[in-house]
Image (tube, rainbow, N blue to C red; front, side):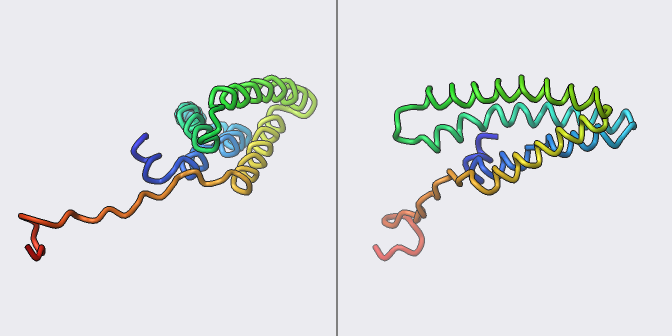
Length: 144
């Protein structure tokens, strides 16, 4: 994961493993237990990857500010608030309109989050400088 984040940058990986919209739609539209278990497993794996990439994004975005811990705490606080509010809101939707509507509401909110992420999350990967092969004794093509 670290090597891929270094070569691609965390932003494309973060976008790739943001499956809440797909998992919510899968839970709402499917009754196949194999598909539901696969979606749940993918959701768990992607949650771990997001947990790994979030500090990388925070470190890259706040580079040089000396406020990494503060930024991590802000991200954690808003994640906790979002978890508490979403659980309550989706529970109300599911009780009033059914489980499928609750899962589709989760999918809609997640899709909106992915759209915001695509629009406003900056690319944080800095391009590596071009490395040229050394020249001198013993190197093919050298003039010495």
